[in-house]
Image (cartoon, rainbow, N blue to C red; front, side, top):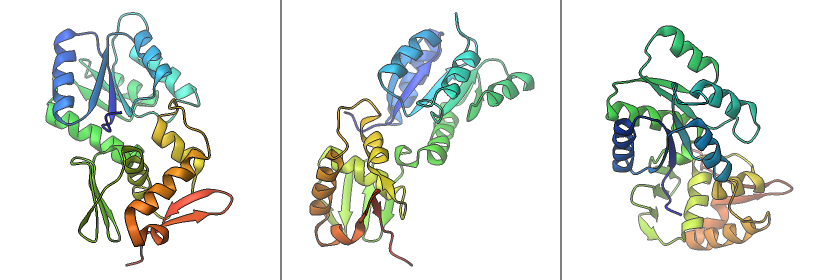
Length: 231
């Protein structure tokens, strides 16, 4: 587990593949590249990515058809999708957005702009994967440096507890079910059981020290929530 958001690039042009791979890795994303919609379906079946960069024009199944399939299945309905294509006509942009793409980028594109668009979509659709530092009460978490501090003092957490805290901090004051928390940790294919989350919550509370019990509340019959102190 790398701890980095996993981006699935679906692109058949080798030069664009390499540009996207380099740019995304430099921006601290984990990158998987495939050259067809069929290969993308296989990757997504094995593990949900954080976001899909999808070329509109592909050999075999088109990007539009793949997007329709992803939006038509419960497991992938909320999967963020950005269309990347050389076709800049308004009709093509509208078609991509109509089938559920979250954004649309035309070739040639600026890698910096593309990274900004990816982060913007993740902030909107999956804020715990956007890579932004977040602070709640005395606790501050920085995904880039993989560090957590409480009242300015370094906190040592295991990788799973870190992921769990990151998800909770990006959804403050929301009662989250054990299934929601587990899916955030395992990408829906990690072999974790429902009650396993209780073990990680206990470890997380202990790692945070005296504020752990008050910051992370048990919601009876539902799961847990991170209580953001009122300003």
